[in-house]
Length: 377
Image 1: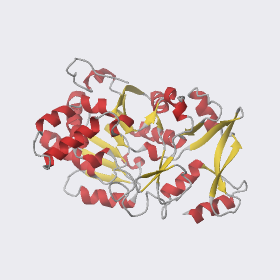
Image 2 (image 1 turned 180 degrees about the vertical axis):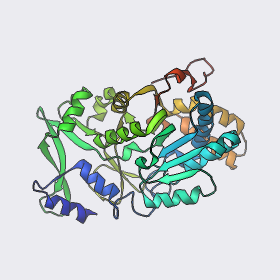
Image 3 (image 1 turned 90 degrees about the vertical axis):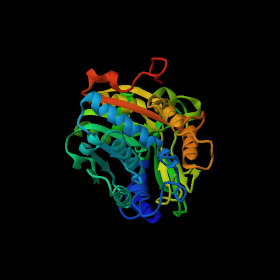
Image 4 (image 1 turned 135 degrees about the vertical axis):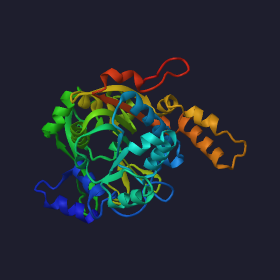
């Protein structure tokens, strides 16, 4: 992969490529890209964990919630998961729907949009016993749908451009070969990309001196596709990210681009291209403003632990109490606690809920909690 990237750089008249182009190759090259190659990425034998690895509780709660939403909103029971990973989350959701409402389950169509042939095979094996599951490579294959579109750690793996304010001037951070030609290095060029400039203007973003920021142009392109295929329904985005106000905090001034290799965080994402995961925190403010211009309404932006509490995760804990610490029930209880404890995995995740064509159903997303209120961040 490194050789292919260096060759691409050398073919350029300017001898460098954007970070977005680098990430597209390192992650999605058809033969050598990280996500496209065979090999485990998620779990103990991979490079990172997700909430799905802890237990089935996330999928169980989502399945029960989806059942309620389909009944209260009148939506067609269609679910589209963006990026299905190993297929475990889909299995947990479908098992939950089947147990909660067998009649609704018989009518439910479940789509997975997955570009990786390796993960498509894992999903097919994992979901072979479920009816009405369709796995497609691109979202365009769905045509227009009504229902629920959701993702869990999907947009964080999208390619991004990188910019930096240096000596009072904006630069785009490019990728080039170092002086020896053996490795990759960064190269600053004056910002000229009109799409990036428009993004900064539209989002009213002003960088401080030496501040670095990822610009999610490919994410916006994908949101355009979602807006085109979802005629009516709910979009649920579970991921780690910040609002514009949070990006301005000192601790985020150097951006969020990171690599993960065998569960170790790698600061320099130019290391090990094609061998490690590369992620960045998504821009929730931009996601919301972009979808708003295309007919969506942001109903909530919650921390994941707040979202899980709204879905009734504490009832799952109560219903599975077991004093024996070695049983599956006790392991599940510990997983639930891990999802809720301060500083745990849910503290770093947000859940963004967007409605389209459901303005008259805005009060049906959650039932009121014990205090009669729904919390929002």
